[in-house]
Image 1 (cartoon, rainbow, N blue to C red):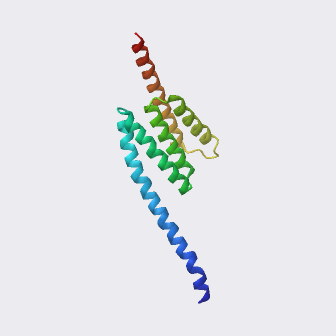
Image 2 (image 1 turned 60 degrees about the horizontal axis):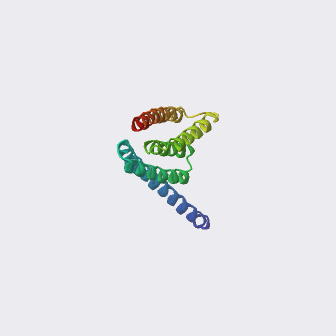
Image 3 (image 1 turned 45 degrees about the vertical axis):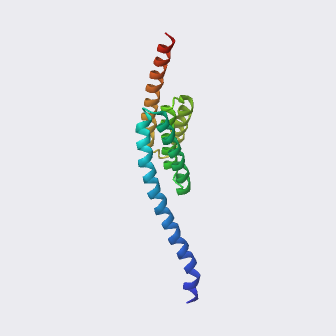
Length: 140
């Protein structure tokens, strides 16, 4: 009987931790959906890109709580997309390069994460070139 009483607090703690994990995972899914929607609109409106960036920061905080480095890196890449949309190219570039370099140093790199870096890098390059052309037209 005494043994069950000693284990009870540990069991309750484990149940609370599992419940919190479930809640955090569900919250991540909602934020991901919301962030994706704002990100899609962010190509046309800076305010939406700004909101998407704020959502990605909230996601990053949750990813840290969940203890998932791959998820943290993905959230950083989401932030890089937002920065690109707001023409903050240098900051976006640093984030993409940091995530890519960090992942390539892993013993078993996450191919999906590396492909995300490459895709976001391509978007950054395209948006930068487009921005440069628009700036050149304004000078004429």
